[in-house]
Image 1 (cartoon, one colour):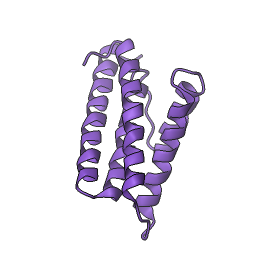
Image 2 (cartoon, helix red, strand yellow):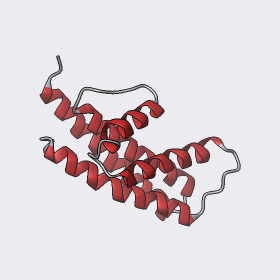
Image 3 (tube, rainbow, N blue to C red):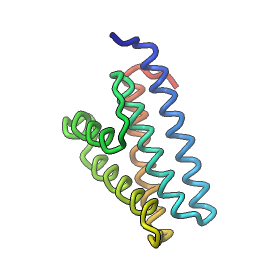
Length: 136
């Protein structure tokens, strides 16, 4: 049995990490660190997704499991729009390319697109959390 108050607090904490990481992504973008911007953009949304999962005491060790479960349980069921799932997939793909491909060049336009995805996704997550009794 899970403790709903602990779940709510964990969700709130994880969303605060999402917001902080988004601010880091913006700083990276503003200073021309586009690779780091892509990394931080993905992690901002990843922490946001984990904030949603915390409401059900669910977590996974692997990123792909978090993303797959989130898409299956929240996007495919209509709790979040399909566009969100597509953007999350792109954020994950670009983060993996930029982190693991030695000669991956990130343009300002690509980094900006990833930031815009965060700006699209995080408000949707925050709204969902607020509707589920997470108080900010």
